[in-house]
Amino acid sequence: MSFGYNDFPASPPSVQIHRVGAWKLYAGAVLAAVGVGFAGYVYLGPYLKMTKVVRAQAAELSQERGSSEEIVAERDKLKAALDQRSGTDREKASAASKVSASIQDYAAELKTALAAAGADVSVEGGRLRVGLPTKAVFDQPFSTVVSPQGDAALKVIASALKKTGMRGRVHAPLIASPPPRELAQFKNIGEFEVLRAARVMLLLAASGVAADRVLVAGEIGPAAAPASKKGRPAALPDRVDIELEPV
Image 1 (cartoon, rainbow, N blue to C red):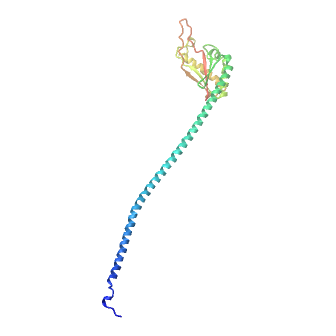
Image 2 (cartoon, rainbow, N blue to C red):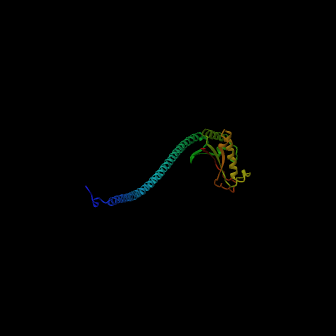
Image 3 (cartoon, rainbow, N blue to C red):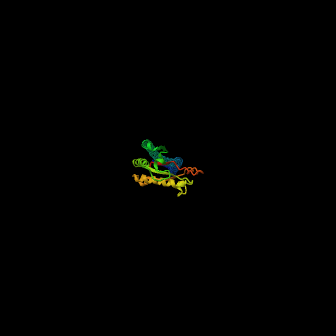
């Protein structure tokens, strides 16, 4: 069997087909890469943006949560302080109520014990005030010497001061009016009243009241009536006021 020259297939077409196939594969790879890149751009870009937003929101929520916790802690702290203050106020009110009740009881006791001396006992602003007639305390109208009756009355008050631990304040009316002629050695009635109050204070201290629990306090008093033309002396205060104050 013999073949002619034209019977053999030409080799170039085979090579050309082969080259065309490689080009197509390369083009497909390029297109695939472009597709993947485009897909990454389309999907990965928004994803990254979304992730950034989510992280920002998470950080914001975390910050808000921290702020909320701080607010709650501050609220609890303020509430505890308020409860403590309310408790303290209630304790103070209760203590003040007990002191007030005790002062009323002491007032009743003193009123009974000093009835013979004509004492005027009252409670004013949480303080107990005892008014003793000067004639029941001093032996003479123009004297600073305490009488036996006055000594007994002041010892009752001293006993109350020691029992209760309160502070005693002897009031001295600071009257600027000239004194009667029997007290010509004083510039005014106030000087004489201060001396009388000091005598009362010293007697209370001598009866056992601690020195830091008794004092003399000046008190502005009304002007005394001037002496008359007939020589009658100017009026002096007719009572000695002693105040018992809780410490």
